[in-house]
View (cartoon, rainbow, N blue to C red):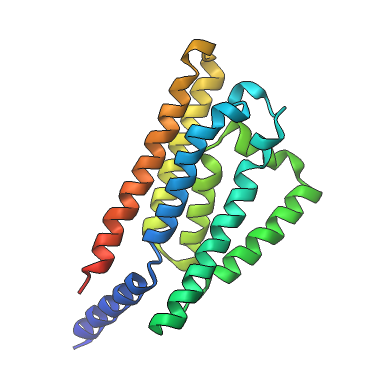
Length: 197
């Protein structure tokens, strides 16, 4: 009896999460941002800029804010339209927490902004993992950790071995592949959400 109830509760939880698109939306949004960084990064200076370009320094903090704001507004609209609540915790809380963290970083810990310069994939990975932890969503945490570790290793290899200027395009390919991986995971998850029992 108890196992049937537990199974039903898990099924209901999965259905509500699917209706809220709690997994696919962040993957699609951050996959698009990573893909956008793959294209825009070289124009902003890439790793060779050494933090000299303001656009590269503010790319992740600013676009992450707009991504979270978009996720929150989409969640609110879906909640009003479908009657499926924003969830607990909502993207409003995540967005507010991110804004507070950015203010603290800018005022106290300015060097943290350089994470987006020297470890470009770690920034969106950390945000995905934080959203996943906040929402108790193992898929987002796992993908955030995998992308973060891969991005950290990629940056470590580039910084340690030094990438000749004629091979700088290789970084954009790595970022594009990471973006495509997140987008693919988001699309597969969206399909599962749509057809979940």
